[in-house]
Amino acid sequence: MQYLSGNVGHNNITYMNGTQRFYDRTSLHDLHALAIRNLLLCRFHDVPAGVFKSSHFLYHNHLKNFYNCVLGVRGNDTLLGKKCIPMLKQKCERATSFAIKLITVRMEAIAQVMKLLPEMYVIHLVRGPRPALFSQMKVGQVAESNLANASELHCSNLLSDLAVTKQESCFRQNFHRQRYEDLVRDPLGQFEGLFEFVNLKFHPNVQGKIKQIAMRKGVVRKCLYCSDKGDAMAASLVWRKSAHFSHVTEIQKHCDKDRIKRPLSLLTEYFGAD
Image 1 (cartoon, rainbow, N blue to C red):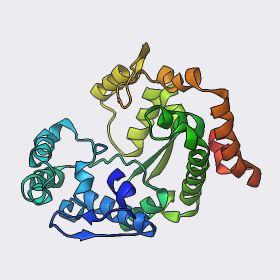
Image 2 (image 1 turned 45 degrees about the horizontal axis):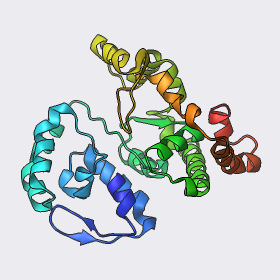
Image 3 (image 1 turned 120 degrees about the horizontal axis):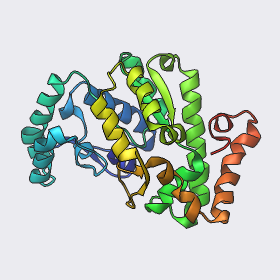
């Protein structure tokens, strides 16, 4: 959904039939919800073409033919729709389960989808504000000069997301919030719970893969984006070694605004000791 988040309100949104439309920022949640629903229902021709070309759109290895096709059409949206999308649609319609990892999508949009597709399962992965913002600084998504504004926006959005999931009745079933901090402390135990939540068997080969990518003590891969962390717990704490005290206090100051307004705020409930 990074394509929509970055272009809505700034550029035209292009579809695979060649049409273009301009949407203002107030339409973002609705567009996210519509795109997610169409992805889950295998209606890929109704999804903006840019969604499939984003560097944040990750393809599983069993979709390598589709991925190579996307690279081959070199940005031609018409060819993307005619040549590549049928490959993805065929895989989707034959699948017994379908998982999507979403970034930069607010829970307000997810609520819209859950009301339309109540059988959908949602896992909301959340991380404490300080490590989350330092990770964004590391990869260049947040500039040091803009840390104050980024901190205030990040914590405001996080609080809003947590509030929506408590207020909306659609989140009372088929919804699970997963703290990142708990996941890295006990990868096997937490993933076993996640598989149980979505009614899938926790196969030994999956357990072996988790041990390989997250439980190799003392091994921390240095890369901007990587799923293989080696020692997930150690990797999650790397930010502490390079964090400037001034940056820590800057983030804390802006996130504390919500805590001052609401002493028992959801930020305190989930991240009081991040």
